[in-house]
Length: 212
Image 1: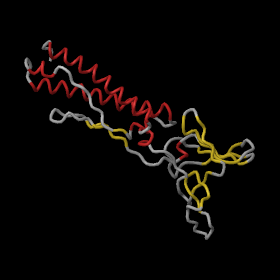
Image 2 (image 1 turned 30 degrees about the vertical axis):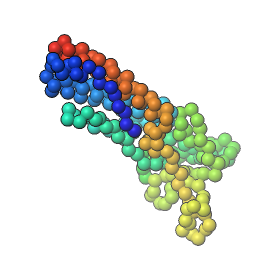
Image 3 (image 1 turned 45 degrees about the vertical axis):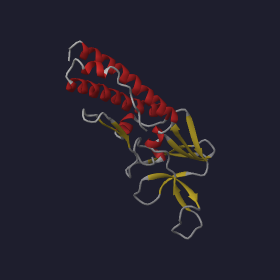
Image 4 (image 1 turned 180 degrees about the vertical axis):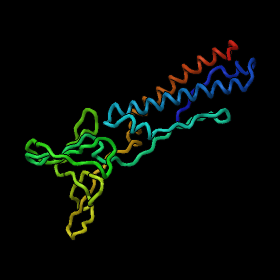
């Protein structure tokens, strides 16, 4: 994704002001706009998905623009997320299983038991206002000492015991895929362009009046 912004009045300033000052002004406005875009990415994703701000923000980085290259780069990295990162429960008749430790799942995460509601499967709150239901899934560790996972028996997974079906771990959308949602991209683009317009208007005024 690439976003271009219009920089108005540059030629007017260059006739009266040192070019280095003008370049620094553009750089400042662009980086302020890029910073607002980074914040908007986090806000838009968290508005839809049940992901913690502290976990998401660590995945978003900003490489600021420099005067020799007016290009600020926002990067978002991520791998498929363990379904148990989200509020998730396994229901099996009268019993229920969930993960005691919230957030990123590690081998130390504990499985706790509780009361069920009479049906079987796994439910997960991946999206803020929508509950995902997986009727044939269950929570377990794929191997001793491993990370707890939401598993399902599938012919796509190889079985170590000779069965036709093995265990397949269910993982969900990545942070990068969350960002690529059209609604998120549109909101981020609008925020960056609006913020740059405000920042440059203020910078242009200060440069023209000789306050910088």
